[in-house]
Length: 307
Image (cartoon, rainbow, N blue to C red):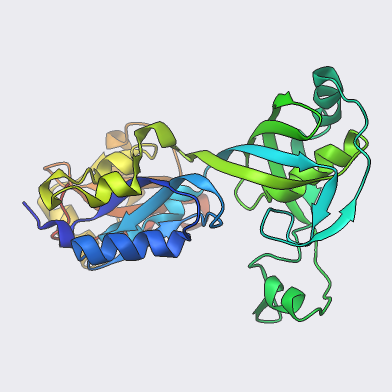
């Protein structure tokens, strides 16, 4: 069995409030001495919920593990806007909150579905001319912020009262929920800032399968529930290869797609190459422009094993 510090895969953490995503990985690295560790989809310190922590060669597969939709449950404080759009900022505007029924909020949320254009907030990590937007904002400097296309599969109002509104959104990566919260409030005739945020899903991962950070840190190395790469990448088609093919892949040769086609379990441009024991060897990409070969997107450590 490969030592935990050298394992590859995913850890699902339920992040507490008051801690940055980087602090979570630092705590885990210090406790378990992981050789490589990172995380996908940063959560702001005030937010809670699912943080997908990548260890070992899981960091190589981040693109394929995290490119799916995100699910958030959010609460908006009504009647005021902050410069950051969340509870950490300074109040910059106040507004009246008219009497609003649940039906009023549901009506206001109707337009927030499908493809949308969204302007990222000034306090965000998006780079403009090599600097994060929040660096300009902290100095009082204004820069042009370009709209980005996002996709909202579902925006559902969960409840509301005179001072707050709660909603759930299933959205594409890169969606700013704090912007969405104020946009919905404006559509209802008021304004708001995000007062609470919890991520419940990221791609195929769900928060109900995560452990609180304190619980993870209390475990012994043999008890840590690492989700191996084969399982974590199970949403991709797989192809089993013989020892000779695996050797060639590890040496960087491009597999001929036609020879693999009969062994592919389900269609898809990206596929996981497995060895004869079922261990992940690489992620390959087949595209008509490079047919009949597959390009190698990622090649994993030969010692990689399910932890």
